[in-house]
Length: 486
Image (cartoon, rainbow, N blue to C red; front, side, top):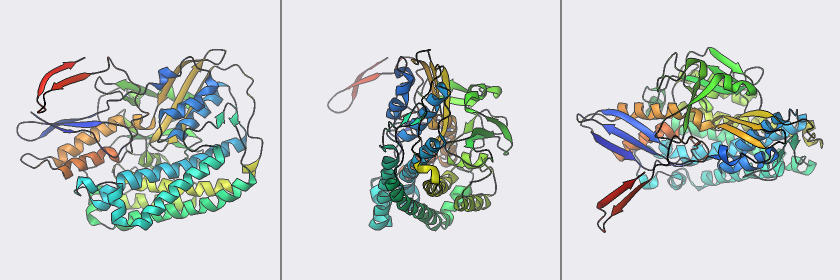
């Protein structure tokens, strides 16, 4: 038995490694994704005042702090039973749309695009954002950086901070939007919309127009058949902030649609001893292991699943590309994992369109942005669509508002089982007996996790046993003299 390790895996948020086991005849028998870090925020917040939670939870991650700020803010509103003012909901959504453009652009251009623009077999030293800029030119690279900076500026104007915001409070937000800032954002939002359209055109020109890439996208190497999860509005349109969680099966039939407070009736979490991530599954089907196909309890929740569970977008440009995408890939639901990159770009377009809608809403500068909660706190759930999947925050408090328990199901956590299965499947399809296990081939295996845009920084909450610790003592030549483990 031979073991091939990709350690560390690259171009993701957080840390991880892939172990591929190859038997004596050269066939892949198994492959594991192992996440060796623990966050543990569910325990950190016990004993803290509930009103502090929206300020503390964004520290769980520097990549999507806005998602945790929004989910925590909604959960704390629910703890107090507070229905916040209409303008506060719109301001939160406006802030969140700018965050989506910022986050999705980072993944597409910095993490994913080197695989497509440079190719999976490109030299490791150039398979990064600098190699990408060298290939596409400084002008495009500069525009990406400029628009990501503008996304941050919009968040600062709306909510005071772009990273680790402290703006959501029980009953609403801390400040209203000024007329001066609204005028500035109006202009900037148009630029964000143009950037989104440019990104989709770039994807069409470089990826969809390349028959080799198109074959890889619609082929069976990167295919995973599971259920899908996402937040939808009252018309089953994609929504990142409001609505109900909808789950559809591999044929697109609705399995369940539930309110935030009902999530524990439908979702449970499994743990394995080799990872700090949990494995969510549909509760009524029970844990069945790593199994795809009809009847599986496993689901995916990220850009493509959001489009799979929805009936489209509420904005016209995103809707146009939604229809074009599914027509190209053969209909809905789509099980072709690499289509996630296309879906992610369509979501940038939707976020920019929605930003323009909200900033032109006459109510957006209304100063009444908060109510003062007066009920006794109990427990509450907040759910939003983080860029990497459905994000659930659940808090329990005593009568004084002190947190007694917390539960988080983070976007990447939903996809953990599917990522693990995809890595194994791609490794088994690409690594053949007698074939060379090249660096480019291993990078193609990495593409199976990278397409999920996983963020392992905030997704690690399971502590299945003692923290594994291995100490290796080596001589000057690197030979291991002794190994001590716990």
